[in-house]
Length: 125
Ligand code: DGP
Image: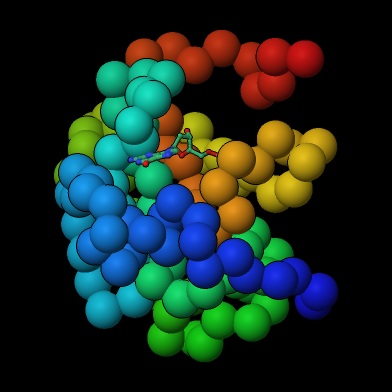
């Protein structure tokens, strides 16, 4: 894996407390907060506290404890936000952008959780 992590990215600053966020969940290894430019009534960002650039970096290099914590927290906030079909919600979409073709804006791994309205087809263009 050949990723370089930029310590000055905006989510690193949020994790350091240098800039504020609207957290909805926090564990030892994971933070969940609201996206600053919501694209749906529910738009959460789930990030590991460790320095991983994209999902493949996280999946290849994070510890088992970090990986389990991240995914369990993901499931918990989907249920709490009311979007999990397994908990009576109408559904959600997960997006994990990586690199320029996906127009990844913030180079700290994050999953978007979008829901609360019909989300349309998978890709716009
Ligand atoms: P991506 O393109 O997948 O890297 O999306 C990055 C998302 O991060 C984008 O939807 C907007 C959001 N974002 C950018 N800066 C901030 C910030 O300072 N605070 C919060 N809460 N979200 C941010």
